[in-house]
Amino acid sequence: MGKPRPLLMGSNLKMYKTAGQTREYLAALQELTADIPRTELQLFIIPSFTSLPAAVEQVDQDLIRIGAQNVFWEDQGAWTGEISPLMLKDLGVGLVELGHSERREHFGDTDLTVQRKVQAVLRHGMHALICVGETAQEKELGVGTERLRAQVKIALHGVPEGALDQIWIAYEPVWAIGEKGVPAEAPYANEMHGVIRQVLKELYPNRGADVPILYGGSVNLDNADSFAAQPEVDGLFVGRSAWEAARFNEMIRRTLKVWKEARR
Ligand code: PGA
Image (tube, rainbow, N blue to C red; front, side, top):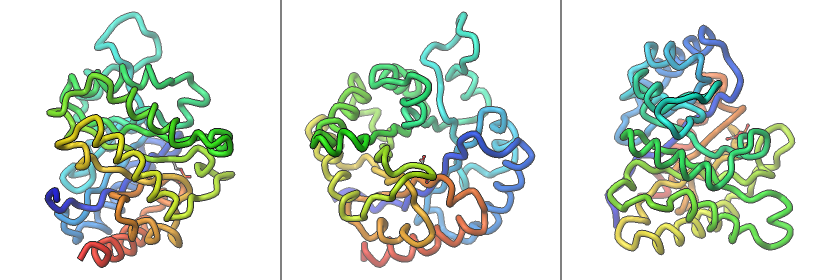
């Protein structure tokens, strides 16, 4: 048994919200959630790159941790349009999301580039939130679990056990994400988290089981608590339904209640 951990809840703002809007959102969210003990909840928000300076200035990162949506693996160089881990660190950003399905689908991120990015993030002492998930086709063809296993193994290739506390995994089935997505049933998500947990244990027999695994993909106010009741789910990674502070606050409270009851 590891030590009890806080419920992890966070949102990727994708390509939404200007710096000013991000500020307003974070100010409201911080105020609304201020009374929730951070021993019970770890909250994080991942705004666009251009909003990061404002975000870091706006929040107390002990209350809301700020992350970036991507990073390049080199510290500097002739890489027009890319953002280096040094640049993120310089801003006070300590969390980086890697391999989101939209990046894999539209911007050429692959298991191997995700692996290089994980290494860069760890090298700079930051945390990596690694997104994995099978497509609808892979699920239909019965290779969903193989796909997950490969994604996790490649992303963590070369990561020493001592760096595991800098790793979070988000299970986000591609077919569940976004407007056209259908949320996974909670027991299915639990089963897939179990598959990921198993790979982690194989790779790291001592500490693999402690890596938090979050569910993401059409999480909303009505289904969030169903995931929190599942034993393999350590947190939720929310898109659309988190982008209004009052609604996200409501979701966090409902989820935390069920989370705590399920873990009594
Ligand atoms: P969604 O996004 O909640 O809007 O489906 C989830 C995600 O992309 O992480």
